[in-house]
Length: 302
Image (cartoon, rainbow, N blue to C red; front, side):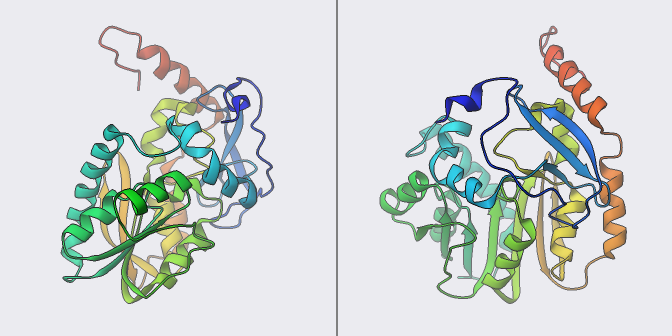
């Protein structure tokens, strides 16, 4: 793990390049924050056209791929090899919730690909229920654990280098897209993995809720940030419409090919979703939230 990642008030060492919005291509942006939750310099902006949140500039794809393959688990989660029992129990519970959303749309024995499957809990649950489940995971330690310890059909790969063995009835990706730099390309790959009637199920943090922590919700591992409209926009650009929405603290959507909403309408909703957040309010909310937890009862200011 790079110790410099923990030194406050300095920038991360990851090389950076892209400055335009990876979702709509606009170069219009507004500053949201200068710092992240470690008090390191990590500028974030929101897009002036669609409201999409991103690090500014974004890391290069090569640097990010190396970070996830070798450093991410240790840096972000404090572990680098096999998952802990606590991690496994938590992910299993999440897998059951996600399966309950997707299951009514799946035919018996459907082929499902979990993209960025971590230690394989969702793949394992699907296999137990009689589905043809497989997955891929770029983290070497977790992919090896899922394959060798659990005996699951899991490949150590990322979106750019995974080679599908078949066409799938559904592709899932849970808390992965916020770690990417080119979400449109990743969604296009998911769309290519599934057949004409195939489903795509994505879950990500919802920035409308996360920003209650101010820049305390921002960190190196999350390169981009979605709201409900921007998640819909990503799918709509590929001709996918919303089939199911789970809008809790995080946001989950199941998509299928169909007629999406008008793109301009979705982008207007994206701008409105984060209209109240700017650099001043995000920085102020961090301190309100942080010091609010010190109050009796530990309740943070909203």
